[in-house]
Image (tube, rainbow, N blue to C red; front, side, top):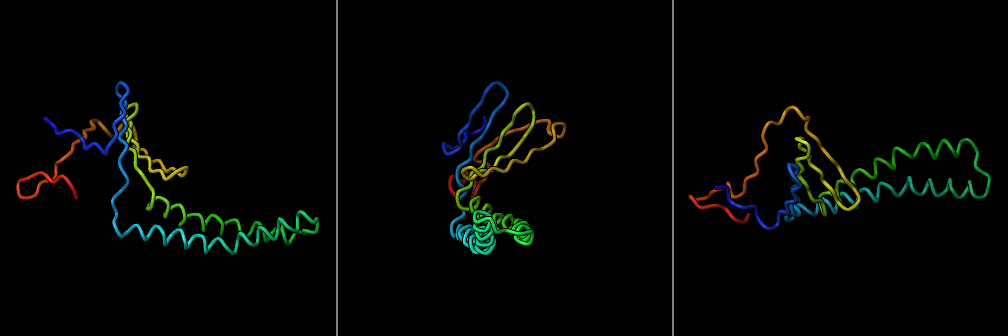
Length: 146
């Protein structure tokens, strides 16, 4: 008989659909990498945001020309580039994972607050989905904590 899942894993089941909410990853000192990525992203965003504030100020005063519009469009990719390390840092610091089996389809949802990233496996590839706990052994004894 399989051993029950740890209490830190929440299981929600409705008919054949089931979802497993996993706890926050225990990364230890590697969490500092997430903080570094957030700080780097904020530093990277400083210049494009100041350019957009300057453009908005000129628009409000009615003296923006085509060059200002081009400059505003030029900084948009830099805004997206600065948001990427911030999102990665949020996933590292506060991210949680949810594994879902719905309509015979396996998907993994990583989320940190409002930021979500879903990965799905194709329907036809998975024939059986089994969840086990306590499979690791050390000196013929099950490992309970890591």
